[in-house]
Image (cartoon, rainbow, N blue to C red; front, side):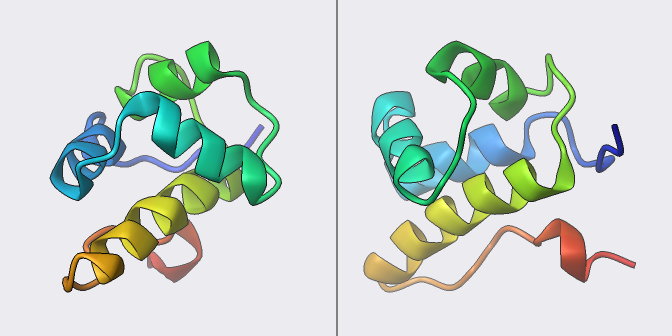
Amino acid sequence: MMTFEHRPDELEVGRQLAGLSVEELWWTYIGSGGSKNIDTMQRQLTGREPISPIHHDMIAHAINERMVELGGDHPLVYWRNTP
């Protein structure tokens, strides 16, 4: 499995900045086609479990969309946009 090397807590910091609970983020992730259970997603958020590029981008997208709703920008980089 190919994994994206990112700051271990990047997604977790983004989640907190977006004001999303783990459960809220998980429901958004599932709604966009995510397939990981909430426990797996939580371990991936904190870097305790590897994350695939597609799942990283799905979670990052959910966080970025919330940031836009709050009047911000897209603070998290998508795996597909990394050098």
